[in-house]
Amino acid sequence: MAKPPAFQFYAKDWLSSKTVRSMSFEDRGIYIDLLAMAWDSEEPGSIVLPLPGYNPRTVRSFLLRWPSTFVSTGAERNPNVTPMEAERRLKSGRKKAERYLKFTNKKLHQHYLNLKEISEKRRIAAESRYHANAPAKAPANDQSAFASASASAFAPKTKSSPNGDHAKATKREVSPEWERLRITKTKT
Image 1 (cartoon, one colour):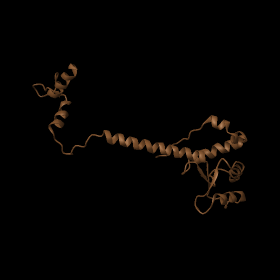
Image 2 (cartoon, helix red, strand yellow):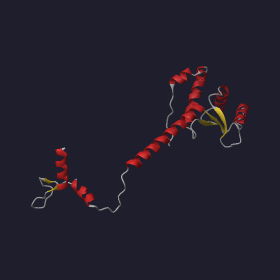
Image 3 (cartoon, helix red, strand yellow):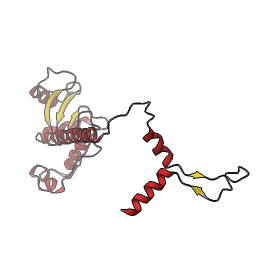
Image 4 (cartoon, helix red, strand yellow):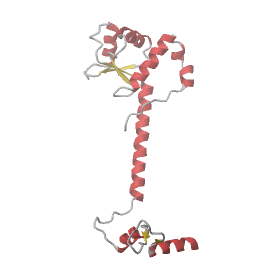
């Protein structure tokens, strides 16, 4: 599944959230930026520090002030770093200590997993519909009378003029198969 370019943003949830309501306008802006970056990351819903284009102190102070927004999930390049160790490194304030720390917004990550599941179900349903309605394959060299008759039935033929000039022909000749089809359709 290709990653969707957008995530659903529920205005009512945003405005009624106690966490968001208690944030300053600056923190709300940082939060929505972090959500956008998390959605656009390789693993939707997660961010890995340091974030390009962001002041590390600003991001660090936001994550420490609002720990419920993004939960520490360890380190990207070191699977031995536990979430508690990642938080301790973040609190230390050292730039090197916080490199590659990973934080996840659980709601956003779950939203991505739900979309992925729905997409997979739709893909499977489409495949089953396609295979159920697919006609049986005919051999590649099938030169049956029906194939040649149907191919010529829909090709209108022109009467050539006595001098052999097809461009000046005035009356079109219709194949017998086409005429039968036209007659049966008018009767029904």
